[in-house]
Image (cartoon, rainbow, N blue to C red; front, side):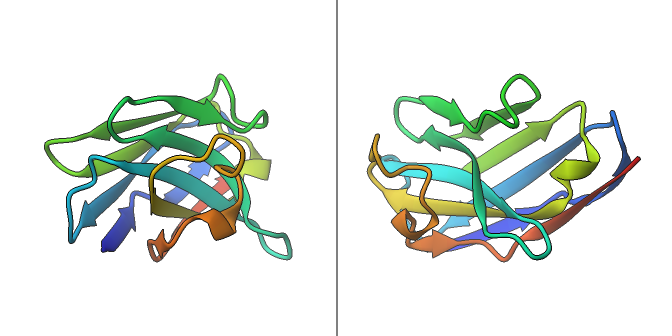
Length: 125
């Protein structure tokens, strides 16, 4: 399984970016796909998750109402649309995947076996 994240960049506060995560290597019909982020000096934190088959989405409180996670089954790609960006959103963003979905563990980084390489998002004030 390979995950390729892209779409990061520098943007001013209030701006928007869309991250993409292209998955390859197997069929992802039963996988949960998530985005995490890690700011300098901080632990990796959960951002959002989408189940591949049903499309259930869950967001961290810090991004709810501003970020939207979605997936394109035909392209094996997951997106993170980020609007109303804030300086505190600055981080390296990682996509992650794991077989199945755990309603109790979806927000833990060690739940996911597969990770992309990360893409940097910088939001200036």
